[in-house]
Image (tube, rainbow, N blue to C red):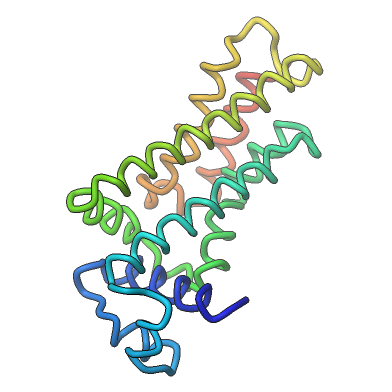
Amino acid sequence: MNRRENITIAALRLFWLRGYNYVSLIDVARELGMTKGGIYHYFSSKEALLREAVHYFLDRVEQKYGELFSGAVPLRETVRSMIADQELERYIQELLGIDPAMREGRHVHFALEIMQHFPDIQARLEQSHANCCRIVEERVAAAMEKGEIRRDLVGTAIGTILFSVLSGQQLLASRFDNPDKRQETADSLVRMIAS
């Protein structure tokens, strides 16, 4: 990992945990044991750093969706992995170096905070959601074709429902913190679509 990427991840972690308005470039520099001037070598402003951090994060999430829904494992196992095992959540925690106990709902506040002030970031977030939803929809269509799931369903609708449930895990963190509820949700979804 290069210095620019280290700065990007450190800033994203701090923005995620504290909120954009409560993080300065000095905070990011301290996190990395460097000077504020060292940050300016790579980024012209806190706003430029925010934009790169958000794009970096969304690119990684889309890439992870692509990996998880690649078709290497049956769709039902991917659904269980994403919901019951919180595969994406664990990936994000690892990527950002965030303790699971520190994550609860903070990213939702961060997202709302930046979307109010940075419409271009909101547009990028919406595009990322559309990209991830399309990945899920394509995997559902392939699963229908293979006979993994019921063929009488509307693939795009099932893909949208699955993506909504996966996205909802972050919004309903308290409900999804219970492993039994996660497993119950995953099993119910799999039963609904199984052939």
